[in-house]
Amino acid sequence: MIRTRLRDFVRTDDECFFSVVDYFHPTGVRGILRYAPDETGNRFANGMKYRKYDFADSFDYMRQHHPDWISDVHIIPQERVSEILSPVDRLPEVVDSDERIKTIARVLSKAGIPMSKQGVTGSVLPGLQNEMSDIDFVVYGPVWFKARDAINRAKLSGSRIEAIDENMWQRIYRKRSPEISYDEFLLHELRKGNRGMVNGTYFDLLFTRDWDQIHQPLERGSDTEHIQIKATVTDATFAFDNPALYEIDHEEIDHILSYTHTYSGQALAGERIEARGVVEDMGHKKRLVVGTSREPRGEWMRSLSLLEKEGLL
Image (cartoon, rainbow, N blue to C red; front, side, top):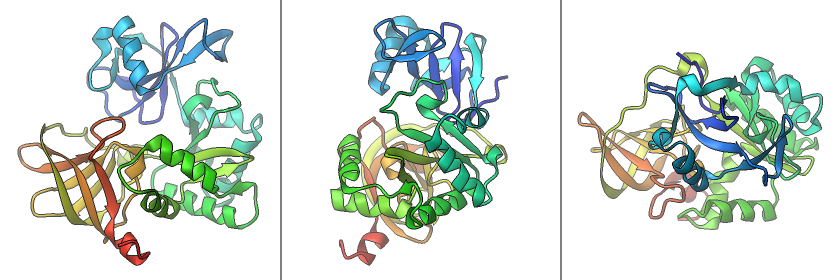
């Protein structure tokens, strides 16, 4: 049985790279194609040219080359996996060659975050980054929140880690195309504090569960209807996971899952929220799913407590 988790990559025997998108892999590694060999590609690694695939294009590629691997994500047969790429193992290889990544790692290490809890994923993990690539930095387990606070302190100290400027926030908003206003989007994002700039490059501080936080696969149910609810968040421990998880106090809905990065970390425990999504009925309980498509229309989440505090309601 292959042991891998969210934000790892796997390389297949036909030299494709997939990002791992789950913690459990009952019938094969659950991932999404990110890079495939292509003579017209503009990414290079190990003497080969690669093309980067976004979410929609990756399914087009898979329909042509591996249609039997397609499910809700891509299911890579374990016997076709040639290598597991770990963000933790990759980090020491790049800190000495990339000053930006070294800066982030140094800030976190000074804050007491061990290197064994740090990693780098995205295009850097398979060595397919270019000059336009962002940095996807990973921290594992509960120390993620400590790392996030260290990044925010660094932004205020005049270090090479800087806050995101208005132009970049506008770019992120346009890319995400969320169903909330720009002012609401920005208010939530600034509070999250897990994004920044280093030497002119945008980076995310991403959460992945530590091994002892991985207990059981995500239950699956049946989608029923779109609804809009108001509720109180009772637990936001995994609000920055993927999918983001919010336990809530509501008469019908047990919890909220968000598959949209925009709504990770969107609310704190104790806050009142408003959300619209699809009800998934699992028989013994129901949940609300926000982000049932790549750019979900009519699905969103916002913290009413935050908006009221800042005078936007």
